[in-house]
Length: 358
Image 1 (cartoon, rainbow, N blue to C red):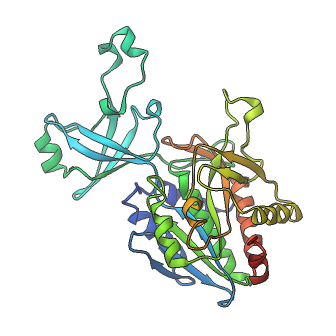
Image 2 (cartoon, helix red, strand yellow):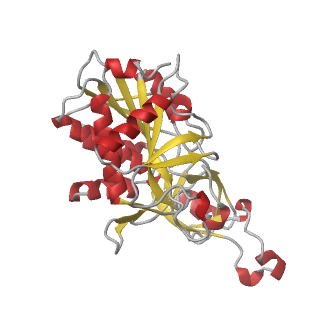
Image 3 (cartoon, one colour):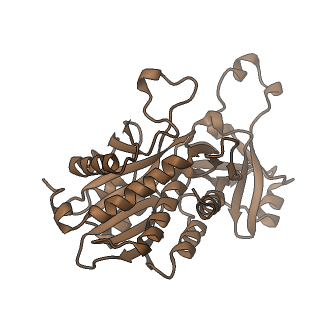
């Protein structure tokens, strides 16, 4: 991984973009792809970056969602504390004592997630996880008037974690927030950038979708715009090589290659496209892993049933601790995913794509 890619990942990770408020991420993507792709958007806010190889060839969609899990302001208490509702799937045990940022009409406001301190709880209360409804964000306001009037906080404002990108001591271990799914956004940026110098028998659409974490909504609307013939969803995968995981159930290990998902909660991927990816990886000596994800879904869940159906595959970069304030992935897995994607795009001519359909 080179310095340009590290800078791109840092920029994408540290940008704030909760569901329904992804405009800052969209600006980053547009900045990196302007000049050599045709950039448009759907009316929900997804960015569509079109790179033409052969205009008469298949339309290849590479979606990666721009939104990250976050929160939305639901109310401000009379004492100036902020109540919130989750946007996306949070586990309550990772939510407390974390620095967050509220996007207000008067600019960003930082705060910390909080609840009643343990010293004020009974022994029985301390044994129970704190319910989300009992959590607040402390923004340092003395009253509702100050929080709402002076700070500009109001219901509907989005909230996201604050976490700095860092290359860890392991050098290839990359720590940051929002990898789900800024990794996918970085992947299609890198793939389209490489395709500037490579002939490809199709038109490729890198799509930064909105509102994936709250129902795959941007994938549905952007698929209507792109009308793809084939789709490869770019996502994080689950890295479960951590203490406490059952050895016999482990599927994702950092540094062992990108993950090809054979089943998720909303999609059975196209078997022929899966086989093409596996064979391409074998020929190019790119290590891959396999994943079964029974409790999660991706944008592929709606893209693969668009109109008459779209052959779709989910390719992920294994990542530890997703759906929390920060995660870790391995640079080699990301590089392997980029290489595999470029090779697949080069193979997806009209004859190959037609053969994907039973």
